[in-house]
Image (cartoon, rainbow, N blue to C red; front, side, top):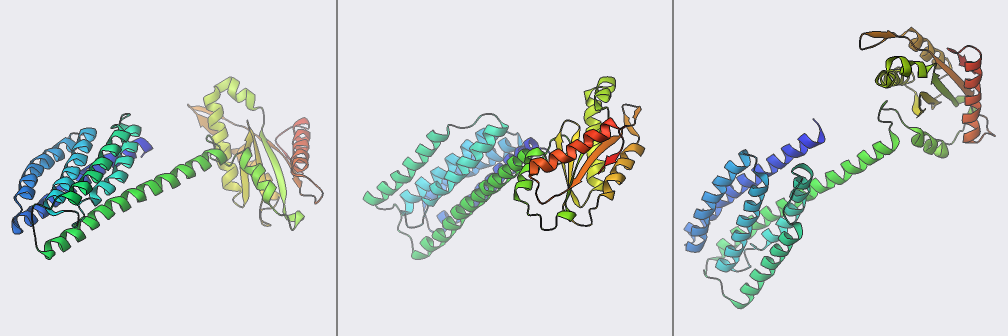
Length: 342
């Protein structure tokens, strides 16, 4: 499933979640309004039941932006009416704080998927003003209803759980988005898109940080596809990309205990990282590729590789190490190709 489809499904499920959540709160607050005799709460809930039921229909019809406006509006309306009815003690004002994370993340999804979003800063300003307004109202006006302590206790618990759940849910989403974005950027920076192998940047960074305690256990090899230009010229660049991808897969599968990178063009670098990854593996790679029959658009293609490899010498720089392997690769090319030169 691609990222766009995943985000579209996420918008749908989040909007449905809030639509269902609002219907649940309607039932809860209606019971509270009836049991503790608060007509204003009851009248609001009657309207909310109609609006929220309609909202579910809008969600199913994929009117996510309109539905989001309705969700924000009814939650803020509940906050305002709740504070007017009972003051700030039942913590209705927490809904404004909970909605800030909801506004931010939903705005992000709408912008990415629907390519449009609600005026973010205007909505934030409205919510902050409503939050401040209900506090000022409660400061200078008594609540409409005087209800038992049990009602306050029930509402404090319910409103706190609901608001904190909203905040935690969206902070969790933001956390995952941040981690996922960083991982994608790291992958883009270190992985070759065509072959799925590490790229030149990764190899150079790795070489700068490795400590070679046993030089005889470390070697580096440069592998080059012979006459690759002829493949592109004869069969096209799409075929060339296919050959690169398939050769990379064979090298990676055969050199399981080595680090395999795409160095550039049709060149690959193999770096040993364990003692059991001996130089004989290079001959196995060469033979596998020479024996492989690649099929592209019903065309059968055979390619060979030439490899130059050198063991690490304690006095070598990284550039010198790679250059020595490259010189042996050149020697192999000059002496007939399809061979490993050590």
